[in-house]
Amino acid sequence: MISANIKRGSAELAILSVLAGPPLHGYEIARRIERQTNGTLRFTLASLYPLLYRMESRGWLRAAWGETPAGRARRYYRLTAAGRKKLAPLRKEWKELFRALARLAEAHHA
Amino acid sequence: MNDWHREVHRKLADSKLSGAEREEISRELAGFLEDLCSESHSTSAGESSAARATAELHEDPYLGAHLYRARQENNMNDRTKGFWLPGLLSLVGTVVFFAIFETAGLHPYRVGDFSSSMNHFGVTIFLPWLCVLPFLGAASAYFSRRAGSGRTLRVVAGLLPVLGFLTGFVLVVPLVFAVNGMPGIKAIVPAIAAGVLTMVVIPGAALFLGIAPFLQASARRDAA
Image (cartoon, rainbow over all chains, first blue to last red; front, side, top):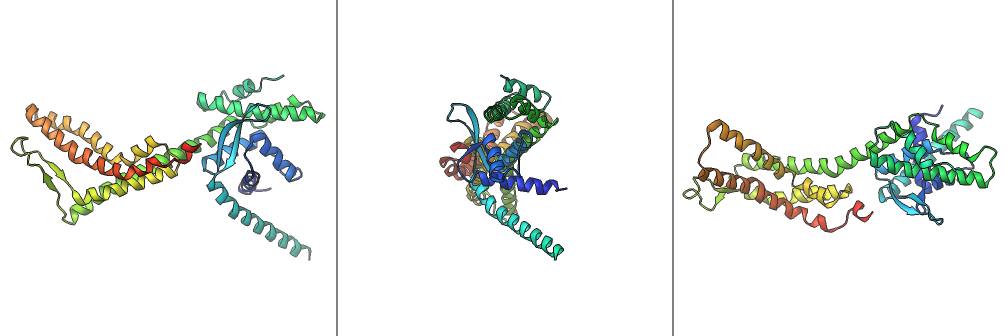
């Protein structure tokens, strides 16, 4: 069972990573994460929005209403300077965690 | 065709979200469900697109509560970081420096001798203290701006000490008069005027000197 903190941390990293590019609305964020992780990470409406609002509250994201190319109103999220600052150490932490887990798994096999 | 906006609104009806928040969240979540529906439609998923969207909407029975908590964190953080903490900095700094200068024996002096014409009430100038106030006002406005507060909140946070003093006057002066008896109007007006000038107007102006530069540059939220 993955703990809630690890789950939340990985979800935050995923969202910050996809928003390192141009602004995206909620559905685009969910689909882009799903596509880029080959379906390993999947966000539903219920798992995505509380997290987005929380990250917005921490000042990592900023949202503003805009229009899609089809003319539909959507709330677009983008990274703030604080979000960018958060992304680099978070990436490093997760890389280290995965490296450590891989070493542990290999040691167990050996 | 489902009316997702109405369905989300209904789903969030029991939450503690305010009307405006519920409306905005409903619009946003309805957009998500619309996109989900149209994509499922175009990829001809086996499951009906509307059923999939409905399942997503009702996946979390406590969705309204979770969204409310996330939003509350937002409101609380914004208000705390953008107003209360900078205001507290200004307030505590003002009181602490006043006490330090008093303890150090840097006595205030009076300007204008109103003792004959104004029944011994004069305007007292705490010069060293007044010299520190612009820095406290500036620090308060800076932190308030950094937290994304608008101009009004920056000013109010910076001026919190003098607003506190003013409130004190409004509450204390009638109480003093009630206890000691009402003196003549000739004594009341200069007493209040001298007190307000000493503890509200002059320190307020000093604080505002520091706040003013931080009203020019745009804040995070101003730019949004």
